[in-house]
Each structure stands twice: as structure tokens, then as C-alpha cells.
Length: 164
Image (cartoon, rainbow, N blue to C red; front, side, top):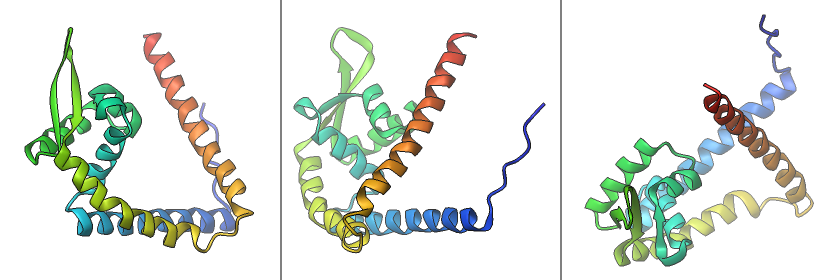
């Protein structure tokens, strides 16, 4: 028997809609800034950031998937498109025929460097410039709670799959 739906009250509904609207507007502003400054999509930007922070600017595809929380198919298609544009290379992992290594190219790094200053400016303008310093710990706790719930749910799904 399923439990009854726990409907949102008016205040919760308002906050939820505010959160969604803010997320969409922030994502759109970042997407536009990255596109204008470097001709990258936000997805490409995310891949390049992850690779730029990795040792030797290289990650296994499965690790890239984990960092971005993407499924393998999405990541594989994205990396293939980016490889055609000269932003990354991919090659079989030495000693593991099934693994794929994705590496940031000099062109990809140059595009990332072009995008970062405007990206940071958009984030600062839309998030931090109007936030009181005392709000940061509250927001950190709030967003950490969301991440914790998601991670617990993902671990539960893995445990359930292992039991099959």
C-alpha cells in the first residue's frame, strides 16, 4: 500500500517555484555567456572543466560520467561530438580494452580559458553580489541536504540492483 501524497502547502509551493525559476534563469544566463565567449555549450563547458581539473587533463569516461552525473550514453555522445570539434581526444585505456580515456586538447583548454572569466562574472552577479554573507552557511546546508538525499537514493538503487 502506498503512502498518501504529501502535498506542498502554499509557502512550500511558492519556494519550490522560486527555486525552479532561479535554476532556469541561472542556467540560461550561464549557457548564454559560455556560448558568446567561447562558442561552447554549457554541457561542453562542464566536460572541459572536469578534464581541466584532472591529472594530465585526462579522465576515464566512466569517471567523467560520475563527476557530471550523466549516463554513459549521454557522455559518450557528448565526447564524440567534442572530439570532432577538436576539444578533446578519446582513446582506449591502456591495458583495458573496454575503458576509454578522454583528454582535454590545447584547443579545448583555450576555449575554456576564454569562457571562464565571463562565467565567473555571471555567477558572481547572479548569485553572490546580492547574497548576505550570513546566508551562505544556510544555503550550503540546504543544498548539501539535497545532495545527501540524492546520493542516499543512488546508493539504495545500486544495492537493490546488486540484490537482483
